[in-house]
Image (cartoon, rainbow, N blue to C red; front, top):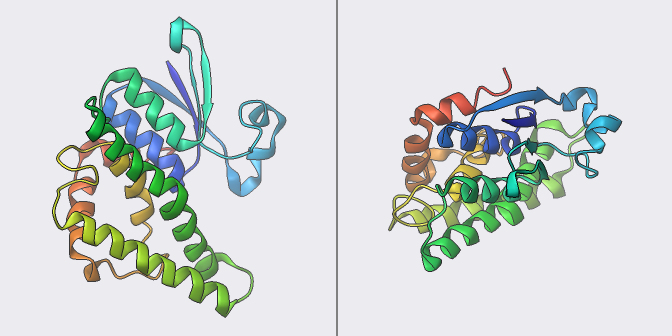
Length: 206
């Protein structure tokens, strides 16, 4: 059994979607970040960086329990554990990993900053709004251009790169983005949103 410590954020949804896609049994422990539960000592013992998500897999490598934080690391672990959602052929594997790293290093942080300053900042900061809105537009353009010639981020196969990126694009309105301006991203987004496992994963935690 895998225990998923999570909340309803894009990073949390990456892991619940992956678990649903892989059909792995798991239980959910809510970490209500609106009440600062990520700073509780019990949670900090799992992740000293006080961020969700975290998984605890009782059947880890060698049959021993393993605790993992950082959503990208968790996705790679789950893909390798099951032999799914990450191509085994080296070139295809590295293609998927590079798009996963783009999500981790750019798409998540930059889109997160855009929707923070547009939606949650206690004061309007024009410089920050302009900076992160422009970067959001640039990144959507990168995705749109890439997806003109392929169905999925890593080519022919749906992978953890798609799962990692999708929940951030699901917040496009928070980022001030009109998805209709990026038709290839919208096609890709709609295809993922229609998957039953994705719909279930987006409902975690209830």
